[in-house]
Image (cartoon, rainbow, N blue to C red; front, top):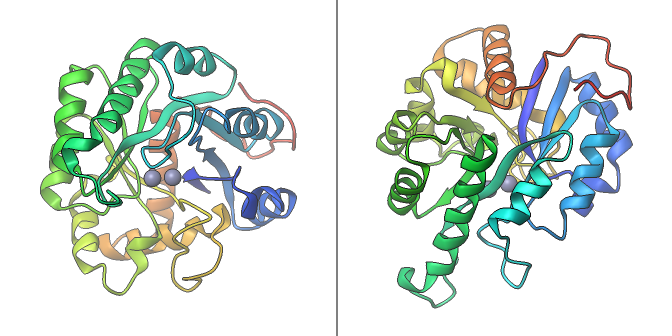
Length: 271
Ligand SMILES: [Zn+2]
Ligand SMILES: [Zn+2]
């Protein structure tokens, strides 16, 4: 079986056809997925997905790209994290890709928001889902400062260098690969994927974005995570079964989920 460690099922493209997506997931042998929260305003919708469907769990967090939304306090995150089936803090992190005319110095609010999430992860003991884009040095520095070695988690949709992967691994983090691994111009990333220890690798779709080859450009869904697994298997010269099993066990261990028992009933809650 496969798991999708990062998807945005509350986004309208996916939320509107959720029943079909769950059927597609089962047909593709994808039995667990983590529905990621990106604003506090969205949390109730994401949380309802996780409490309403046995295949789904959720996070609580505010994405670094979201402006003009409610700014979370540590208490806002900790309170929501105490609800059933919330298994992670995030996604959070830093994104200096869209500065829109601002300087990196102007993004202090983003660094502060990231620090708030790290404090919530420390307070709850939950793993952190980290987004980093054009900001790896600051991301790692803040994680070190605020995390104090007590925070674990995942660098999601990894597109950074081997050196950044090594630094993230040294902090105890996992590395999650997305459909980008299947893109023709991603040879460097496939080389990184070869080097990360298998027991620290996760796979994800980041759907509705980043559909893997052969679906590139379409609306992605968790049912296509096996294509990411196949790319990881090919890059590492492993068989698909080995990669599926390792990434599933890693996911369940990191987010402390029960193993899928093979006969979950739709709507039933397993923890
Ligand atoms: Zn992200
Ligand atoms: Zn995301």
